[in-house]
Length: 198
Ligand code: GAR
View 1: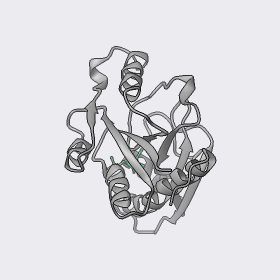
View 2: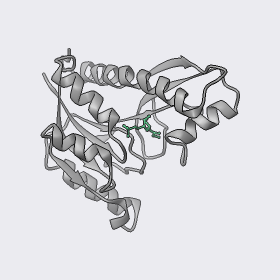
View 3: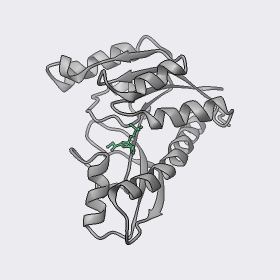
View 4: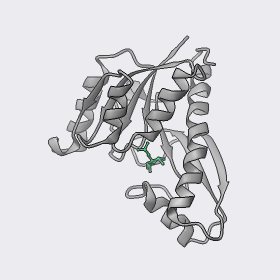
């Protein structure tokens, strides 16, 4: 059975693009039912449109609280039949309803529980990893809870931190690992939910 996905994003949408490409290539038995962007300038919006995917903007700045913003997201999601909600470069807090527990996944560009938490996103993470003198980094896909970057880890992939790494070079290496880890986690969840997914 095809896994029906919703993708929530705030940025460039390379994570979304990876899913679009894998699905188009027949490498992942999934469909993206809707993309929700938290910012009208998010590059992911264009990617969704190009792929013919429904896309809605729920601009965080238009809502007074995380609660109201989250309810707006949930009401968009409720318009679709969704199996999994993927946070994909999603830089806001989504306080999802209890009925979504175990269905919301997040990807983080470090080996959680290290280098996670509020304010740790994108390049900040890689800067912190290099500043700490780590020799290894990676990415983590985990089930989201109502906090930042917590919740049980589903898949982790490790990459080396090289002596001459800059946040950019490390980010590229980690992102390549993300492109494998996230679909792997979706397949894992599909199996858990009793769906076959190639
Ligand atoms: C990815 O590296 C993802 O792990 C990270 O943002 C990037 C999104 O890229 N997410 C976080 O830092 C969340 N804490 P994209 O917008 O091009 O898909």
